[in-house]
Image 1 (tube, helix red, strand yellow):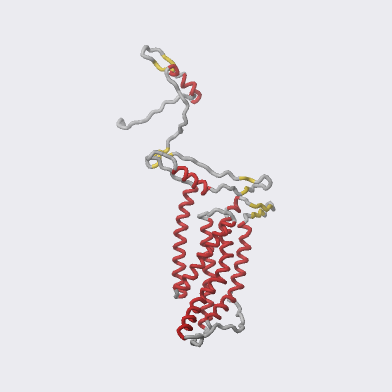
Image 2 (tube, rainbow, N blue to C red):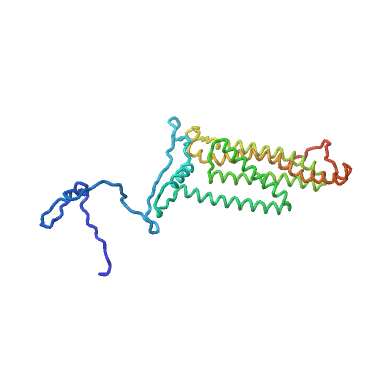
Length: 326
């Protein structure tokens, strides 16, 4: 079709595509003589790109970087953990970019792994709020009590704080993906422990037991199960927390290998969160369960003018600890 335009590119053979060949390129003058172009052209080297990439009509330049692993010379295929954290370097770059006077039409965006991490982080934040909301709804339906539901949610939040404090102690950076996944797993474990504890308390109360004695009995019954599950979980996660790898094929044990480092932050969050939640489940939660009954006793005693108010005093006689329902 004669209406279509076709671009035609004429190129020298590859052997003549050099700067020297360009200098020797002859062009005709007004008198008809052929003069090398280097006689009236001055060339200067400058950095340019060999191709121009556009996205949505905008010219785009890519700057790629990665962290060089520090490999161990003694252990085969084992690399030590680098002290450089990608998220920290990205923060430094963002602060530096904010101080630069770029033209108004220049925009800087972080892509690749950083973009995927930001997207995963936003998803995990939404998933965390959704998980807490669903947990609250299940607890309300189970106990029919805002106080007991909020008590378990507070225990979950405190366990997460303990996990974050553990990462500070271990000098580990917060990873949106791995640490966030560990916190969500930790929330499920803490909720399960406290549900069983409060359910045991309700069963003892339904049998007619005094509230304070019911708190003591339920805590005593849950002591062994909570302690054993916490110890076994922590013991199983300790090798992951210290990035210990065992290669059964070559019979080699390495510390700080690339595969082990991937799970360090997740296991650290769960280990410290479980250790902290043990104190919460067996200490704080029983105390908060007994608190409303203590307040009622004190208010009734004040209204009655003494201890003879009809409110039973806490039972201090010895009692047998029933076998825990594990």
